[in-house]
Image 1 (cartoon, rainbow, N blue to C red):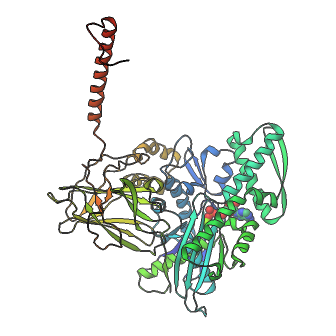
Image 2 (cartoon, rainbow, N blue to C red):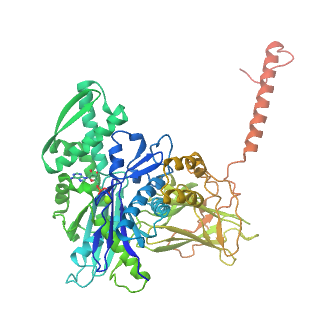
Length: 625
Ligand code: ADP
Ligand code: MG
């Protein structure tokens, strides 16, 4: 049986690219049906058709309401920020439409027997990674894994300099900084290359920073100039705004090649020529660039490394073509950027190499000749209450920049006697204040055996896979309870909804077919009741919460400093309160009863006061007014 072709997909915010590895182990780019290596990540929705790529991009200039752009920025959100023809779509559904187009291109080039790796920014969090994998699955792709874009870029670089084969004379370790500034996201990652091994040391980034922000600064500048001249802001009209963005992107690209350019704007029968210099453009975007430099310094600090230890500076992403980026990085690092990999192709090529690595690992032939270790970009923890302060706190189980896969267990104890259930709220973020972290999901350990005394131990484990996906386990020692907990996710499509969307997307359905599905999109707001996969199958019932509401935090974990620490990394053990804990808000009927009694008493008092005014002798007032 022929082995499937290893394919890498760089699913970018502005452009996507596909690469594969040939039988000789060399990476090659796949050309789209339009004959291009880069496919615009834009989707045009028409009644019977969903069109992706160049054609969709042109449509933004005439029918912006039908086109979805920069959807990657909204991954991990419930819906894409802008309505399409009056409907809000889940972002992973739109990304799945892009992937289905890329799939058609790669099947045309390579045949149907392909297995893919999709890339994500290293700074993508767990819900965004899951949404990306879900999009691939809905598009009918056989997704081997999700891999970080900088890791993929480093693999492409490793290939070009001979590190991956381990056969070159590059015997010493090399530290590489990957600075990836694309259209919508920014990532900076420090990696160590050794012959046959790629190890990620530290990573940081911003999923809301990219070339698009530079574009919008120019748009602002152009719109102001036009308004000053003609009294109208072209952005007030969506078509006018689309054209202005297009002109701004063109001017930005021109300023990468020349020191000045002129933008011609036509709107509402009026026109204006706005000259702009590279220096002006650099000045109006200086703060954006500074944000990337600040993050780069932080990554070095997190790895505890001076700039002198960085051997190579790898620039990835189309926005690194801006001269201001190159100049600032040369000043910051005191070294020239490496040009050995194409910034548009590095990520897709590296992802294809990773796919090959995974495939050969599966077939145990080990010909890929290298291993990869990633780290997690965000800490993961559990919401708890510190009884000393009664403040909610984030107890971190897996600190950021931990090499993956990683598994951490923390010992907790139950709070009350005969506690029957435990709620675990999973947090992502570095802050000790849960309000400053993202609540990515929650789960419940139910049906604890009857009659357990207070302070009974409960061990909660987080297992973080190499692709950045999380699993939660709980063990209650000396009982039969040992469970894998399903996270009730705060955002993202439920398995059931994914199942509904899958046939529509993989069957090339058009927007009219999406319409019916969109009409009950509201269902997506109500995640399923948490389920347990258990050695003793159990049923759990709880009230579902809407993802946009703060989940009921009445039953959370709490520090119990009086409990003995069972030697778990010097952290105090944590007490977990039950669902019937006293901190839970009173049920609704009690609130109503109290309100009813209060208003009755107020009515009686008002009546007595009215009588006392009429007959003060018979109804004296008991207080002085
Ligand atoms: P993504 O991975 O987010 O899709 P890419 O790496 O494909 O992004 O980069 C796209 C971004 O690069 C866009 O914002 C585009 O305008 C910008 N870009 C491409 N070429 C140039 C250039 N010559 N000068 C300035 N910016 C550029
Ligand atoms: Mg990119």
